[in-house]
Length: 408
Length: 89
Image (tube, rainbow over all chains, first blue to last red; front, side, top):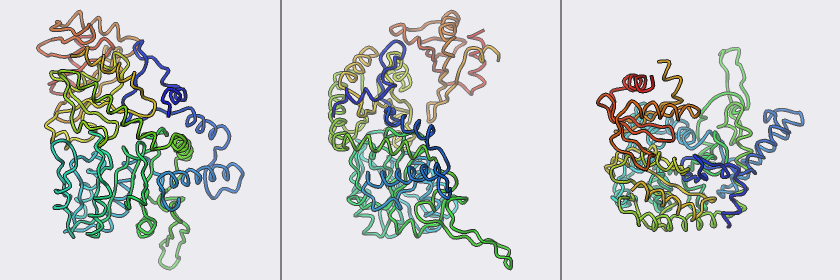
């Protein structure tokens, strides 16, 4: 893949910030959009906009087809069995909440345990903590090693026959560490536990095959993989989705709502998968934009995406270690992580570092990255985080290191 | 608080242990705001004329040439607003 050619597809990368060329290293928060995605959204609103399903007119048929194609494209991208296993949601957070409330609320009880890790994004902690207040089950936290890698031994010790669901990120949004999901899935299934994987930082960056991983749930966001904001995906095995209660109630997710004149109540039957979990008018153009993003990534090839990011991460780690006052958190081996580098500079807060870099047009993130427990584990008040994607280059990393040298 | 509305676009409050306030000045008035603040506050240190470490009424804060400032160890947002009003008036 040629990142210089790819850059031509991204209009925003031509921008200057404070008279400097924009260097966008905040890809773990959200990615920029290629013109193919922008054009797909534009084209939808210009020529095909209508509400989906149960409309007999031409535009509604076109919109329905596009929206269903988007589900098919995503299913193919992660090697799901069919689009029935692909539920469109607002993002990873909503996908996890869907599992918590449509599965957890009905299946978890006092005495049960939900296993999460200390490297979790808050979105894979808070829904379970909230639900445990209702159902009284225990949320158990699995420790991470000092370098930020998952402690598999602690995992093995924590998992038991009380464990009903194991939740973990495939890639940490703070350190970029790639977890061995297959190993955890095997452990969990031996204990008859389900596995929910937060794929927000993995699906955009690695080839992800849900059949090979054998995960029960996979949640990810469109905007972190070149798509628009407000659209995300919950993959779940068909038989699990079939056994689950709906999440939101309303139009689209029902087949029939019939009023019984004797009982004076309505009896309701649910729509087919995946619509049973997509109540109300969905984010149609979001789905269309996500389909364009998936096609863009498929054209590049996810193996190529991974290789490019590995090269950039290795290069950045080497260059950053030339700096005296910098401290890189987490592993320094590019092969065990994705393109995320958390760091700090002695005497400066992460926000100071980010604002200094911003002066030179370099966009990074600062703060806790919605992962406070992991920062507490590292004894950090916050961290600066550079994260890369397909359009980033070695020259941008050189410029980033030059600016960091100036801060030092 | 009219002067704050004149100059300040947004105030971001960070989460976690470091309860910082990040003040972002309006793009079209940021240079004016920076000049006013540099006139009123005492410069402790300047890094490449990009970051200014300043003190004002016994509070330390950092001002950026790009029109942003970080205030730390403040009691709450009303204390920040009082300081900003004094700095920008």
